[in-house]
View 1 (cartoon, rainbow, N blue to C red):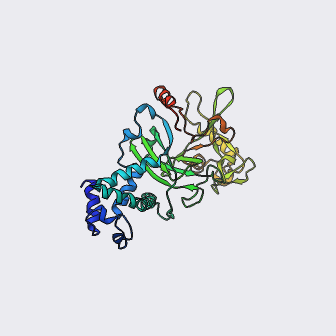
View 2 (view 1 turned 135 degrees about the vertical axis):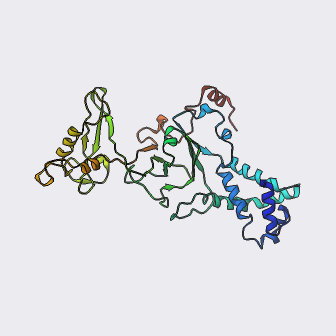
Length: 346
């Protein structure tokens, strides 16, 4: 069924022979909502760009190259025009179009509410009120194909406990995700109900993984380490063996690799480093048989999913390091020249 036929059938089901009759005051007195629910849902999906061809979102492949992310603002005037165009499919004369114009503010309020309910996580409060500024990003990366269930979180203010904290979606500092969908195997589209200050993109938290952290060393080398844990309590510990909440505050235990075999862990040397670290509970004693336990070694190597953080620069905002400030950075030269040549609006 075509969209116009769907609209007409929905209004006729409610006892209205046309859009014009549905807009009459006496008809609205008997209908709690100006628009049938299935139509409101379809219009909300249009607002979220569902069904919009990808080449209308990214007109040229060079605007979204491999391993790139592009943040954007969604123009409400554009999406409202999209909704109005869909509604106009059910009008056949000037009178019906005029009456639709009178009815549109109520329809718009219903769509504002519906767009926030298209993606409703269980157990979280639903947002109400008029819709605000929508932002989002497009990401093209092998990470999207490799981890289809990427977690995306946006915050209006950074969590007080640091980058490792996760706030529930009902928290006032958390920005609701309106749409999270893969448009292609390696392309991810995300829409936010607001303007974020911090965005977290994280690998899925399924399964168990092991790994090390890397940091630049002396003479251009790279050093590998793990954050020290107490194997009896599983909590992080600092250089003095005292428990700490975050891995960034924990002691760094170096991870050794075999000479001439990059990436191959030297198990013996690394196990000795674990045992010598204060507070890990891995020291070899007569009580544990004088040898390292494989389970405790694995616990020390356990790593949480990798998280990429995009945030405003805390040191120099004027240096154009704000990831959420629209700019011409990364746009091919031909598009940059064309945009700069456009006359400014009065």
